[in-house]
Length: 296
Length: 244
Ligand SMILES: Nc1ncnc2c1ncn2[C@@H]1O[C@H](COP(=O)(O)OP(=O)(O)OP(=O)(O)O)[C@@H](O)[C@H]1O
Ligand SMILES: [Mg+2]
Image (tube, rainbow over all chains, first blue to last red; front, top):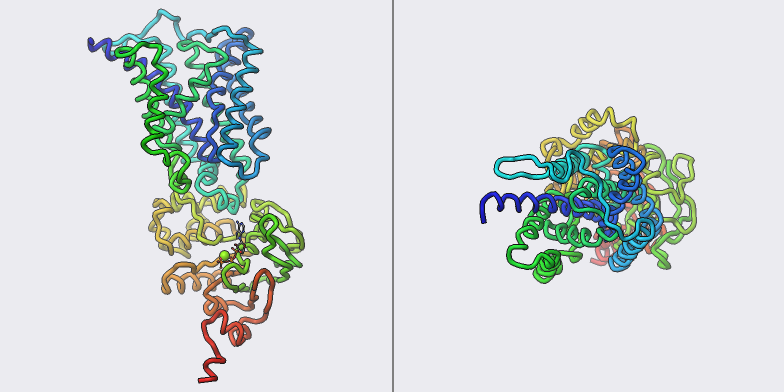
């Protein structure tokens, strides 16, 4: 394999990997404040891009993306208020069933609103054939948009969680919900906020990636599985590790077409997930104390 | 400052607190002693709003706070230092303290640094550990952090649930010294303690809680002299001594 081609595959892997990482970080944000794995996480990505595509019919690109992200954020809040907030100490199994049920519900709604058609936002700059040259490789400018926007979101999130009072309140809820209440923090509102944040970053990621991967009512399922794999791979709750894990999975997938039919590409994340679950099944829901010690 | 009337609470159908009445006057240190499982933690958790009372009333500063959420109670100036310290272990000492100021809302944000400096003067060890993760502090340091975090809310009433639990005697003395100092600075304190001798030693009045009921109350000196208290909580059996 030539060096150029090699780098080309790396670039493609990084693009997808970063989206997986954003989905994984969405999982982490909610998991950290609530202990819930929100399997509807992928639907936020789908909703963000599908809403933006519809809005783009009547308004320019930037406002449609902003508006779609805000709308998705409020859908996240709505989901939390309607389905999660009133549950008293729900079991993990119950939460899994609820969030999977929600993801099916959202998908079916999306199918009836947008149909089965594959859509896409236009390229932010240039078009499908334009490319920029970086060193030895030529990549689409949209790849730079994906990488740039997503890395920017990760950086902003890190800053938010570590340097703002609101972010610290959310981490406090993750670290010790009872002590957080004794510090005057309304933990229920923090949970709502975590759903809003996850929905927001998912929607933004869905918009930037739409021109490359296209959007469809059922795109969320695959993303949720891959994002979940990455979240586990990076150790649940740790955002920077998720970034690394996402890029590793993206690159693995991208190179997999060399040694197996591309139809099996999606099987890689399932295989990784199974391996992790076999090797350290307790790592998942087993020890809450240890999980609680993990950082965002 | 705090008045509790016929309080009942528990977990589900389990009644733990069965008709407790007590009061704390401004400027007092009041101690509650009782055996393991008597319901001391349940009582403090109910006052602080973590557990809902099933009946009875809790009056703080002539305001009925029964049934108020924990985050509301603390913003009124009634703070709990919970059993087992409960610091935010993944966050730094300074972050823990900043969060402690949350109940005071926006007006505290501007003067947080000054307040942190004030509690560092009370707990110089914490100043040295400014940027250390709270989870990596020693038990004694964590207890100091838990108290310091509570002080950040500028409370008028501080409730402490077994502040001496699991600590070496010299640290216990240090903690009790700080409790006395807080009273001198105008705070009111409600203590729950296993270490009955030391707690009654620094407090004005005491209550004895047994299986969810107050069975004895009075000035601390009287309780320290009381035979039943001595036998049950001070590890001294006068009857046996007399027989000898
Ligand atoms: N979360 C809970 N759910 C059910 N029962 C509980 C719970 N917490 C405490 N209890 C029960 O309530 C009773 C009183 O417990 P509590 O913790 O208030 O006692 P305590 O006086 O603080 O004891 P200790 O000195 O050991 O801290 C005990 O019988 C205990 O088993
Ligand atoms: Mg207790």
